[in-house]
Amino acid sequence: MKIFIALLLVAGAYGQVPPNEIDQHMIKARNAAGTDFTDVLARLCVAPPPIPTTTVERAPSGRAPVIPARDIWYAEPAKVFDNLYFVGSKIHNAWALTSNEGIIILDTIFTYNSEEEIIGGLKKLGLDPAKIKYVIISHAHGDHVGGAKLLQDRYGAKVVMGAPDWDSIEKSKNGYPEGKPKKDIVADDGQKITAGDASVTIVTTPGHTPGTLSMIFQVKDNGKPLTVAYSGGTAFNFPSTVPNFDIYIRSQQKMAAAAAAANATVLMSNHTEFDGAMYKIKLLQLRKPGEPHPFEVGKDAIARYFTTTGECAEAAKLKLQSAAH
Ligand SMILES: [Zn+2]
Image (cartoon, rainbow, N blue to C red):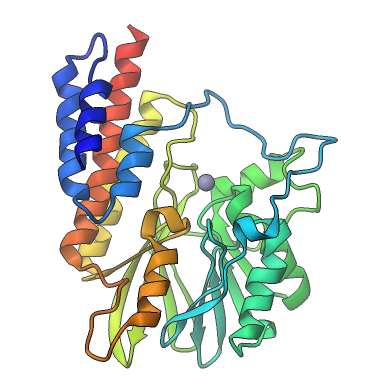
């Protein structure tokens, strides 16, 4: 934690906006993050990546996307709740929410690893990928939408996405060298995607992309129902403008309110970095009867998560304003 405080002090040394105003947001973020969300804090508050001023296409024309070695990304699939399975990689999450009438996939991963992790993962877990009914894509970046076309083509699964992200796929010239998913379901705020006894409520949270979707849904832990708040977009790699940060900040507040209203106590994300999926799955395997589920962080921690992302965005916005002077 000391290193964060030191970095926060250094990061506060900015121009026109009084530095302590930036610091105040970073300190609020740090206090909200506590020891639960240090990776979120590190990524968003301490060392945000260079922010592009225009949207970047993921796979430039004529150049094959770089595929990392398998041992960089491969992760074993795992059962996480009675009706929720991890079928992602070491870096990116994909989830299978099961029901008595089919499977809902929450996010896919890249084109190069969706076949092995999602389809292969389901089979390893004893689940039938032909039962996939819906694929909800939090946002149309290559690390989450990569497997959508595959699941659509092979199993006739319906792909659900926000309208602006469907548009970005349609407009993309080079982002889908292996073909684009065809437009299926355009998600609305509050819409429920239902398969049998599983239902996912969409919360539109523009910011990370204009069409980013977050979600609220129920899982069961040894029969006990728990509500999940699923954050669909986290990093600030959107065109760096004050209005875009304002949109992002409003969405953090909106999702915090939706999570609180639903009494969510489980936090999930599409990046293992942000929800700790990799180590929580390991902890789950060591869990003894009666111990809490590692993904169940509680209502207060979920509120603190969205305070962390929102306050880091406030600080980044002020830095941007101060750099513009
Ligand atoms: Zn993204």
